[in-house]
Image 1: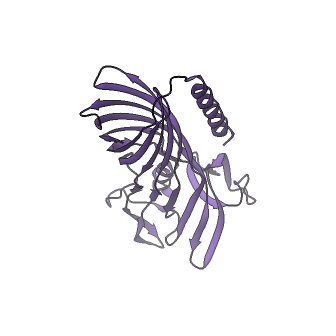
Image 2 (image 1 turned 135 degrees about the vertical axis):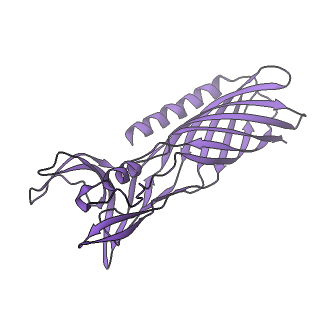
Length: 285
């Protein structure tokens, strides 16, 4: 969190200095941009959790039952609308709203419990509601028709994470990110068709590790509230560290029964970092 705030402070200071140095002012103009394409995300902890826990031999999961590890795909549709305001000959400020990003998967696992094989539905789901991005662009004319825009800024990615823990048959975990902040860099080429209409091709690099998920775990009539933690655990007598996600007030440090060891404790992360490639149309007013 401190690192992100530091980057944000440096970015705001850089914007102020660049605008102060820009002397050649022009008549202010507004552009409306519609763009869409495809993006990638790293996902992170929830995929690592399912890959580790669904292979847990403690349940004697049969390998011949067609079991599938539920894994969230790294790809997603990337659609945005953006308003861009020219501040000078070279600088412009953009405010973009993205379409919701919904990532889900479903798999049925068969576990041996109580002497019989029972199906358990695993269905992780992450929803990122209307990403909001603020970017500062520098415009460099390449010719009478082509312009290169280089920029970057801050993104807000309010997200909800839901999953069913693999170690219980009936249960549910619902959490919301309380610090959904990221940063992005953008490179774009504008091709003028008329004085008012341009085609665009845009690439975006994104660093957005969403964390500080807070919510609740529901197990029957029991509701446990707290922060979503990631850690690794080792059962005494075993030599395998399992990835774990758990709702609690604080990260586990020790087991009072002395049966489990813990390491790498931290707040769980949904990693939306990645790259997006979009194309679209720009309308100037």
